[in-house]
Length: 85
Image (cartoon, rainbow, N blue to C red; front, side, top):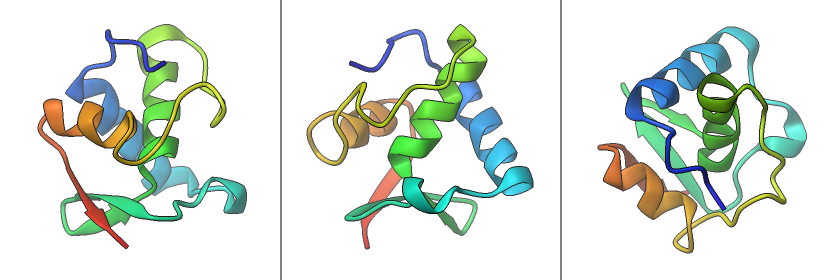
């Protein structure tokens, strides 16, 4: 389950960190991407990193579901766009 205290500001901080550090190969997305500022990001990895800013730890990909189940609606509620690959 995704912690509800993750805000759009935490998500933007995560995107900034990904731009700086990259995405580990095992954390690339399979079906959807988060589209932000003309660039694509793996939604689950973005949320995982955003949790580090909100709660001090990076979430595992096993801690919550991806895609339409949990991740995409969570991001959309915070004003972000997810798109199919």
